[in-house]
Image (cartoon, rainbow over the protein chains, first blue to last red):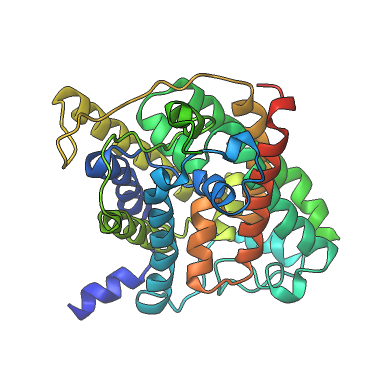
Length: 190
Length: 164
């Protein structure tokens, strides 16, 4: 049993975690006709807290309460992993990335995010504002404009063989490639 | 909002993949099963390091197969599961037939998709991982989340003036 827990503490390989993520799609369909997606919760939060008479937020968000329960679970799942299943070793990434990031003064691989960039102390620097506030805004605006995020389009939409979701997924990747390779180096140099 | 029940589904499903297709209503504790699915999903996200900013940087630099393996195998399992549900007309645990709706293409999937991609690579998180990161104790991700809610709100505000 202890060795099993030890195994769970290690990073899970893609061929274990990927299929488990894929199973979320049939699980939600069979539990109650729910299509898997996360970003719609951002809209439900708007509809619940700040509808401001905007037609896009005037709907019965209680019908989508299941989605808020799902995302509350994701948060709790994060807590459980950190509390019971945490791996004491830093994340292992490609040495080329380690070299590149060292050039920007990023050396701490202990957390999910580099402490040198994502911390309350960094929030009010130009770099921090651009990355956390600007990045968050792009996520919220972009996912809703696209009609879904990685879970809604790349997992659910592709699972249902919807070609608009393939277009969206390709665009997610293109946007990410542009940011990581061309824009992020400029932001990190600030 | 209760005065327009006939259009409620259309409004809820606008610009959304994940919509509650069920006609049934249940007591609130029936929602707890989604909490359980969320917990399992959150654990997988963290343990597969999908929530790691570093892993996302690796992916967008083609320095590792890991993320492509995770997403690719998830999609393969998803496709097979959906085919099985359709082929054998498997019903939900409440006996409802499973609903599938065709999504229409619009320009938002391109423009919005590119904008989201930029945000994904800079924060190292898509919406699911933001919640999981907060759960692991990266409290500053709350700022990313609030900003994402603001982005969604602004989209809702200017939606009619954007190309679709």
